[in-house]
Image (cartoon, rainbow, N blue to C red):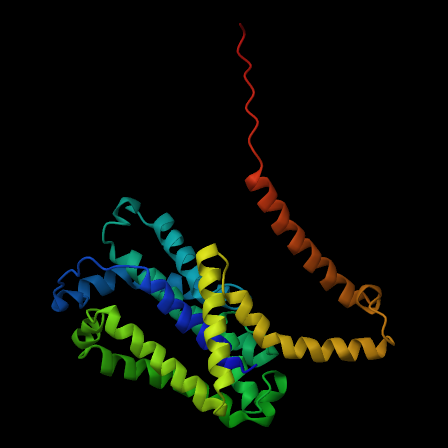
Length: 299
């Protein structure tokens, strides 16, 4: 199964299926000129941008801390340190700058563990890891020694990308905003068509298209039932490496799975894995358990 087919199905096709159920009743008219911040706004949110950038970067180094997590953390932090927290939720410029600063910092910080140890911290990093492996690039300590041109090109592209973001987006912000006005009955089929053509062009096999559609349905059901898609993405990326490592370990132990519990390092990680699973199950059981109400009133 091709990795790209799985990703396109989980994200693109499932998103189209979710949006088919939604109906947009009205589209508000906004004045594009009012979107530009003034110098007073920039001075007011400078502290928020610095704090949120630090929060987003350091949290972005941790596995599982996606931008959706760090943005809420940065917003909550800014609300706590503000002298006027009642302004948040009513258009406070700091409440806009903090999540955006954390979002950008988290996206950049994810490259540190990915390039250094080959560990994806978010679904987007998992997608990038799969792409690098497709081209024969193995993220890790040797990546800096064997492919330094690629590493420094990625680092340089971050600076160039920010400059191009300002050059292109500020003058064209009105045009980008008008894309949101395109009816979904037009935009949806275009997305599905591009997804099918792109998936088929990978290996020119119709099987990849069917895999994409299958995982689109799986992603749709996961969204409807409240299951996160990120673990599925990480599993699809790490499955091949896990299978290889499992085979090597079983060869070393002559087919005995006890090697995972008798070696100190693997035993610690296995214990942490079981504790994590057990904690999740226990939390679900406690959440669904009925509350017992006692009445101490005297009759």
